[in-house]
Amino acid sequence: MTAYLHIHGLRKTFGDVVATEHVELEIAQGEFMTFLGPSGSGKSTTLYILAGFQDPTAGDILLNGRSILKVPSNKRNIGMVFQRYTLFPHLTVAENVAFPLRVRGVPGHEIATRVARALDLVRLKGFGDRMPARMSGGQQQRVALARALIYDPPVLLMDEPLSALDKKLREEIQHEIRRIHQETGVTILYVTHDQEEALRLSDRIAIFNKGRIEQVGTGPELYSHPATHFVADFIGDSAFLRATVQAPGVVEFPDGTQVAGVPVHGFAHPGSAVEVMLRPERIDLAAEGAGMPVTVRDLTFLGNNTSVEVATGWGDTLPVRLNFGHPLTGRIARGDRLMLRWQPEAAHAFAGPGIC
Image 1 (cartoon, rainbow, N blue to C red):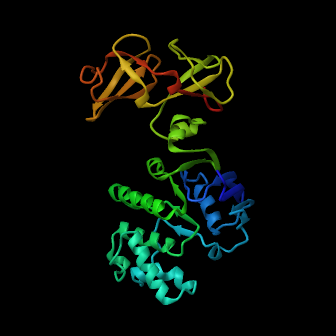
Image 2 (cartoon, helix red, strand yellow):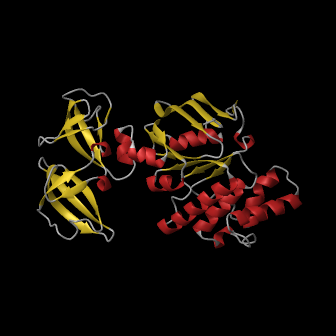
Image 3 (cartoon, helix red, strand yellow):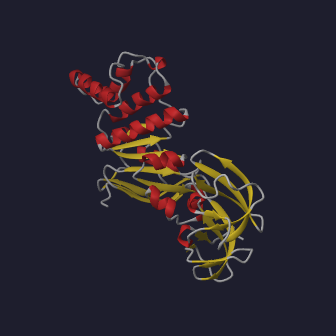
């Protein structure tokens, strides 16, 4: 991948508080990159430095091979869409969208043409004379998106733009953002704490935690091959079982069950405590045969699958998802003793501080 945008060794402190620490990331032209992580993980700080709203303590940002740190925010030609729509309430939709062009001195006849094209792009044709107060939240966010795109910025930054919308509307605008990205080819950096949103929209995702990037990859890569305990826990549904390393790739659970071929992440040697991550949809239950003995604690029929909570012999619990038509669907009840099993490569073991 050729780096169109290079975030190099970015560090930002506020007094004694470290907001970001050695953020390193290369983004290709036209890529949709999402910064995903919990509140306070450094993702928005990184975005604000890119926009020019904050100065880094150390590091650099290169756009097309040139540093932009000394370029004022209003000269970087980078589009920005915020969580709150930040529309001018006294201006019409067309006037709001036209504003970036007017401050750049674009001729009036050209402004009218480009405003019409931008409103058509976000499917608001015919809304130019409407006032923002007379529009829904989703429509206002489309106006904000049109305004950010109207001057053809090389990079578009989006900071939690859909978090104020309800679920149905959020999914509708997600679809529109994805369509607009495909039609325009603009490079997008998108901040969210919603993993489902990140998986829906992104070409790649950077997982932020405590000011650092823990892992970068596509959704399937992060889900199937998490590099750290945090990533495994943050992306998708997961459960963790205590175990001990017996030999390279071999872990033993407290009831004596041993499983070979489990990838172990972090420094571990025989005798090390680890936590084994399992995905609910990648484990299975059987009435008999090989596996780990478990007891059914609860079960809920959800139509296309049955969610089953099971308990191990030492008291850990975990969810199992049985697809509709599974041999045990409708045939098990609370208190049943079953065998839990999975393919070794479907599990990941994590060693490190705090695991005991």
